[in-house]
Image 1 (cartoon, rainbow, N blue to C red):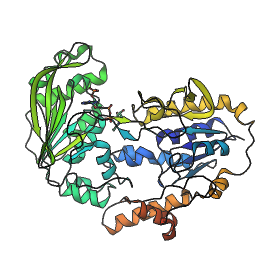
Image 2 (image 1 turned 60 degrees about the vertical axis):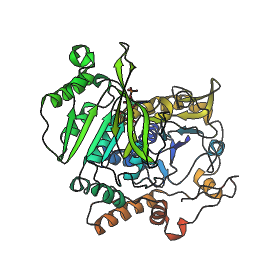
Image 3 (image 1 turned 135 degrees about the vertical axis):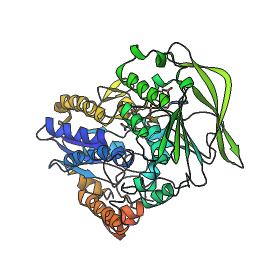
Image 4 (image 1 turned 120 degrees about the horizontal axis):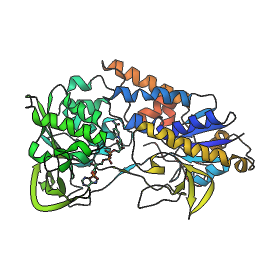
Length: 464
Ligand code: NAP
């Protein structure tokens, strides 16, 4: 019998577990996650108002409830948690599905000024990630700049432009809801360094901005026309052509008056974040022009957009996991069809799937074929992997190491606590936003104390 650990319970981890149990009738899979809650970016990245995408959790749930799959939450791998090498002692194979945990940087002056945040930090806050920091975000802000024109930029711009009535039915944590409901941000500038035909957002997400009840989208037809492909979109691939058509519609239709405005801007690359009284006060952009090869060049002309909140939404980036090789250039683990490569050589029993394998691109469904490719590689190797005999149940061994996982019943207790919290607030489900309340719900009060490791040389990370 093949025993596999999948590290990470987001879409790539769940699809990996699903492929494993579908393709091998005897495999047993433990899905480990450092958080006590499963589903990764579906829980902590998909915007709270995207109920339909969030309902994918129901599909992922059936995977984690499969009789040959176990969810072991609250188990950190690497760092001060369970060493990667220990997992190799307990399982025939380990598949790392740890995603891309951090954000890319702009590398421009003022990037770290108070009031300037990565979109990831903002998303984590309104998604109730227990590591999120609440530092006011929208407090005192009237104008926000979102740098980047991908789907995450669209998400954060939309969340800034929604009113209390639209946010109330979501599972957003109460503090974020209160802050956004009271927000006075009424100008949101979403800015791309290239042209409208090169924006990374998808048409469905773009179009949604135009359907917000109390927000108006503005685009400047002259700025759009700087893009030759905007003027002649016939040669564009269908997704980009559709984006251009939506933008053209907004450019040609006079906007209705609304409480908030979302300005879509193009051909402006960030040069510097401007400060006033120690906080961000705006962004200086350089006007760019197409270079004829898909890129842009600077024109030496600058424009300042005032903003008291800046969200940098320029893509995610993978982080190295102790004990695994890492390619700093791509932010991924070197691999061959999912098999981890150490100095160019396949490392037996170690695999990757999802963003840590291919980089932070694609929609949730992209993870399905990606996971299947990895699982196919793993099962091809299975004959040599199961030669290594394993004794104890890995869960028994992990417990003996001092690890105290949140099992499925613990996660279900968190779900119940979130439903109860929502009912008490007169809302639907409302997420628990911090380690203490999550661990208390999962284990009861005594579990909120730090865990100690015995056999493992390092202690486990305290849930604070
Ligand atoms: P993304 O799609 O890679 O977009 C990143 C944006 O940042 C691009 O507009 C890029 O411009 C810009 N950028 C990068 N470096 C920059 C710099 N130095 N200065 C200015 N702009 C810069 O990343 P993402 O929005 O984080 O999304 C990640 C993945 O998640 C994507 O595959 C996305 O589709 C997916 N996602 C999907 C949904 C959904 O389906 N609803 C929601 C959220 C995320 P250039 O193109 O010029 O590099």
